[in-house]
Amino acid sequence: MKMPNYCNSYVRFENLNESSKGKYILLQQRLTSEKNFSDLMNDGSISEEEIHTRSWQHDHIGPKWTTIDDIDDESMSLTSAWSAPTDGVEWLIRELSSVQPDLITVYSYQEEQPDFAGIYVYEGEDVYDGYEDDFDEIRWVLEQKVEGLVDMKDEDGDYTEEGWDLFHENVWGVLEDCGSQFVDDTIQCIYDEKATKP
Image 1 (cartoon, rainbow, N blue to C red):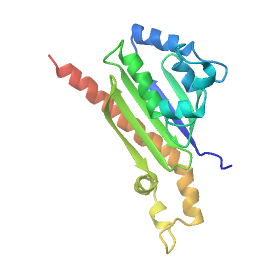
Image 2: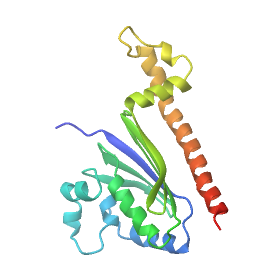
Image 3: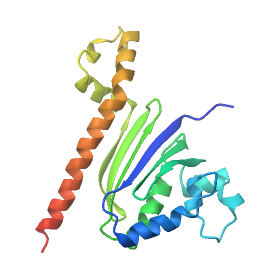
């Protein structure tokens, strides 16, 4: 059986107020020892056994499994199989936005190769701005940011061994830097718009 590629995700709530933070903490109390994301969604109307099935998780969260690696009162980090748990994350955002409509959420994810990487900023339950890059787009970004990488290709246009080494040495740092700048700029735009509204 082929092992899945892992996708690592991170969710951060920028401006939780007392009501949304309280609700987030209450949802965390649903977590079992398995720390499955689906635990957060268990309001008692479905059995723990069913909510942990791959089919239920696929239908309601996205991937066939998603575990919570770390969680605190403002963020969480996740690992999932093959794809990002966007359906589940958007459920959580809706839950918290129902008590705080101006909630700002940052949601990012990267597949381990990385075959894709995305980052989105939500205002309330709606995406304010964001993007997902596939592998070719990630390569293009790296070639703009990493000196000499674009020249480390063979006659078929693929990286040489040294090129791949340089790519893997830099890819996570470049993605993090680009994502951080995007988030900072986007959140500032949200606050600037709020400041100009009567």
